Image (cartoon, rainbow, N blue to C red; front, side, top):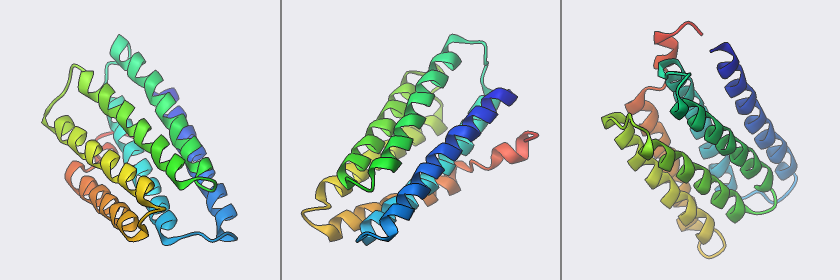
Length: 177
């Protein structure tokens, strides 16, 4: 288990490092409020998903095919998050698109898992809302900045609601970290 949590921590560090490098580059550029909202959304959702991943890893049968499949796909999704953070400085739309695809892959994977309980069904609905809001924000960023910003702010509010509803911090309460 220690190897899994260490690997998840490495990927979290890489994603946050990529975002920090992008922020450092963009501070000197004309960095719009919409981009800052994307950064806040990106970081808050990534940390929430990291905590959920830890919780799921503790609960899972790590010898099963499903865990191995989910873990490999999870690594691809983490990589897409990292690339999304890197390309933000060049293209807000591409960053949003990559993030939406990553969330879509994770949602499909969760949908086909054998353990789709009520909490996971709620999470699937939340992820669909994230995808819609991210694509809306990315596609409208050059047409109507206010609608794009509103989409990002709603996505941030949804992450905060998701934190409250799903309590990803339970991993600290239930496990010895």
